[in-house]
Image 1: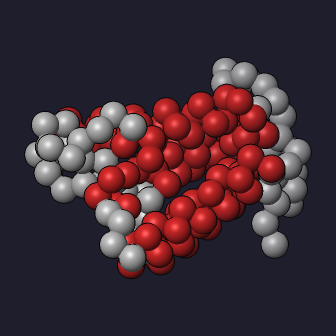
Image 2: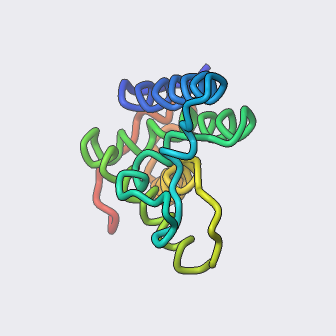
Length: 149
């Protein structure tokens, strides 16, 4: 059904495993979401590691399903274009960048969860490079050219 790279599959499975594990740990009393969700700086629960960990938490089944559907559908396009290492760096950078933008634009004191910022980054790159896809029936055949070509 979906074409997917090893890296996209690893992100996909990591998100689902962490979702299941986090919900199980919450059930037995461990404050999983309180520990790993991103709280705004200044909040007593804020920790720097939360800029990464929040991207692997999701608020509910629909949240994770739609994020992972987008990752499975478009992640390999972006990874094929960028390469594995740049893709991982891009995924983390867009997730952190979305958080920083959210923190600058809002005054919310609520914790943040989800990979939506990273997913939107993938969607934007996929849209930008789509004219460079040779065969619309096979997204794996992307021309590996620079942005200006």
